[in-house]
Length: 64
Image 1: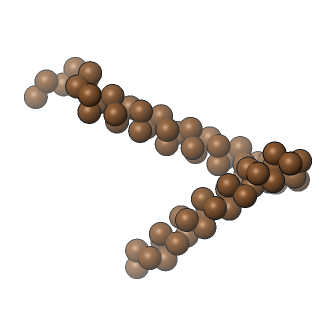
Image 2: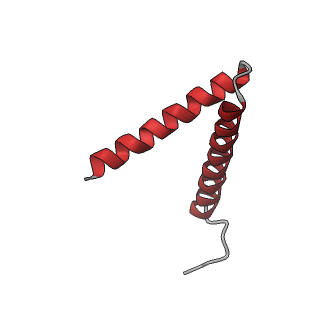
């Protein structure tokens, strides 16, 4: 059950990367739209990882 879901996620990631490259080379508007969504998702993941790392460093205010 988990394998098809994982394969789907990988296929979406690869397809998004292809659209980013294609849009850089002047692809159609649909490729540019998918590229914009892919880049925005990447920024969100990067921010969430940065926030998670900041919490692991002990800079948070929760002193349990």
